[in-house]
Amino acid sequence: SKSNIGLIGLAVMGENLALNMERNGWQVSVWNRTTEVVDNFINGRAKGKNIVGCESLEDFTTTLETPRIVMMMVRAGNAVDEVIEKIVPYLSEGDILIDGGNSYFKDTERRVKDMYASGFYFVGAGVSGGEEGALNGPSIMPGGAAEAWPRIKPILQSIAAKANGTPCCEWVGPGGSGHFVKMIHNGIEYGDMQLISEAYFLLKHLQGMGNAEMGDIFARWNEGKLKSYLIEITGHILLHKDVTGAYLLDRILDVAGQKGTGKWSVINALELSIPLELIATAVFERYLSSEKLLRMIAAKTYPRKKPEVVSNKEELIEEIHQTLYAAKLVSYAQGFGVLKKASETYDWKLNLATIARLWRAGCIIRSTFLDDIAYAFEQDSNLENLLLASHFSKEIQEALPYWKKLVATAAHEEISSPAFSSALNYFYSLTTDRLPANLIQAQRDYFGAHTFERVDEEPGKFFHENWTGHGGNTKSGTYNA
Ligand code: 6PG
Image 1 (spheres, rainbow, N blue to C red):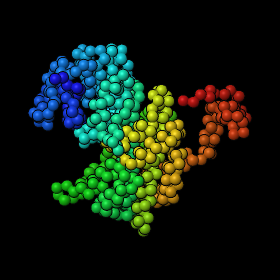
Image 2: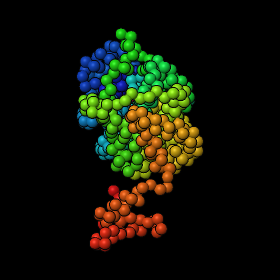
Image 3: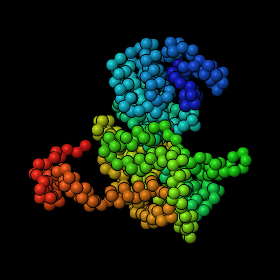
């Protein structure tokens, strides 16, 4: 019999997705650039399973029922275009291609268009959850050619993670929207990881706490409102010992890598003119971490005193707990702000509640907190900012005294906590009706006749002042980039 779906690319994500599909009753054909990889899979993990290994792309396409569904799990970038170019001669009109990698959404946008023109349906699907998720249920964010959705839906929803029985796989929108949503997911993942790392460091240095105790604290936090995958695995990581019996975490070099999705999130926030400061901080901190040599030299130039141990331990733990929650909320408010603006700009009609629900299980940022976010957007689909939702404003009000105290203590004790303080400053800037931007406008007008609006005049009316008495009356244009 013919296979229901074909899978290209047998790295760990591809293999695991194929096994997941097969386990859910689908016959899967697989192909990989290197035949040896196919053989190893077929004679190894796929042995005795309803999985068909193929030597050539031509064979591969003939084993699939038509219209064909082909999912690619190859490295983002040129490799995707190469596979498309190679497979297209063997496809027929109406066939569907799904790209399940971390492709840049603008590439996906172009591929959707090009494939339409050739008579094929292209879907860019964000897939999150790492190896484990791919095998047992990832979160899937498909977008692109909507014609493909009814056909791929039963397969993708069957393999997706379930949150209270609902599959974490829903149609996101047209064009590159699926990959855009995955990109923001990853940006949020960077933010969460940075925040958790700051919490760890403050527990360690403001209390001199050991890994075992910190591991217990994270386990405890994982029972409450911070309950999430990343908090859970942090608890495990803290307790993990290597073969020598030493805590492995303490032996890991403090230099963070990255593959680009966090950076793309920030670049797109800049392009859309929406603040994404927390994620930007997380990305820049990874860059700074990798300047290890420079940091070592600078540490000698500016020797640091040992932080004072904060006397009230339980109080400090609660400060960190509340700060982690509040700063995380700021990060999600910013991330969803970018999604909202992208949706308007690209006319994607994203459903923010649906997106929050997609992330409740399977993916790296899965948490109970996403239920509250989904609820907030369900109550008000035009919600301008998550911090305005009544549930969250209550939470922020509760956290604020702890949050500002902790940021002040960290600054005083000379421990960097850039994401915690960035979040707090965003909160202060957001929640005031008077910023010092009046001075920026005055300066712009002073040196460049860029004009300003006045508080005592109608908005949209622009003025220029002859600040020095010898400037002219010629104004500069008033456009905003
Ligand atoms: C996921 C992850 C995954 C990502 C890794 C690595 O959702 O399963 O986001 O897609 O590739 O987390 O990301 P960095 O190497 O950029 O940290």
